[in-house]
Length: 231
Ligand code: SAM
Image (tube, rainbow, N blue to C red; front, top):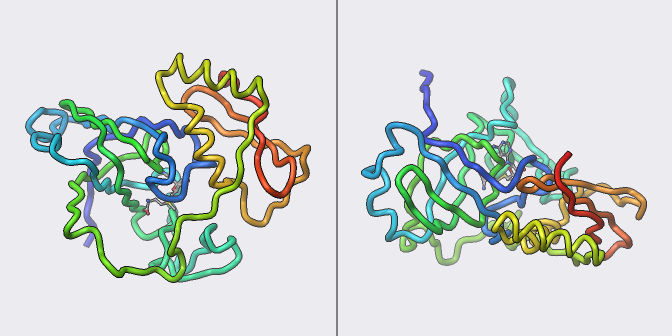
């Protein structure tokens, strides 16, 4: 039996590419976006009552990771990218039906729009359903996950003076906490686990409408080199 589903809306996110998106929600509180609902869910009735709720579950499609062939095993980056486990033991993006779930902060509700923060979603992500977080049922005392029990360790993020100034200017223009967003995302250390890059190697990512470039001056941290308008 096949089921067909239609999105209720699409996320407009600070993340314009997959690289450097935190691996779970709530790891970057400055990661913000707006879920734009489409008809008929853009009507005020559909969100009535949501103003009483602080967080929502989003059920969504990993639209940029869909595959024709099912995978039974995956190599989660969290485990260093060289240990494979069953797909159902992981939250990997490559999975049956390409479905993701994230609990995110609901900052503001208006008809047809949910303003969100702490997101781990790419721009354009199709959302299939929205459910309120229910603390008494969704918080599980004593729960454990032996593969990923705590948030990933953070690395230090430093700035060049000019990059910090530029980030502050763009933050003012965008009306977004861009400095915090860059620091929170880069502190997750987005490089693939197996890479020990030389200091001359630069990495880049697109956030909102800017491009952020950084390098690894040593083994301990990141230095942000540039924050420039996207080409
Ligand atoms: N919290 C969700 C879950 O557990 O189902 C997502 C976890 S998944 C490991 C998080 C990663 O998904 C992010 O780091 C980002 O690279 C990727 N991602 C986010 N939105 C995506 C999309 N629409 N298509 C493909 N990959 C996406």
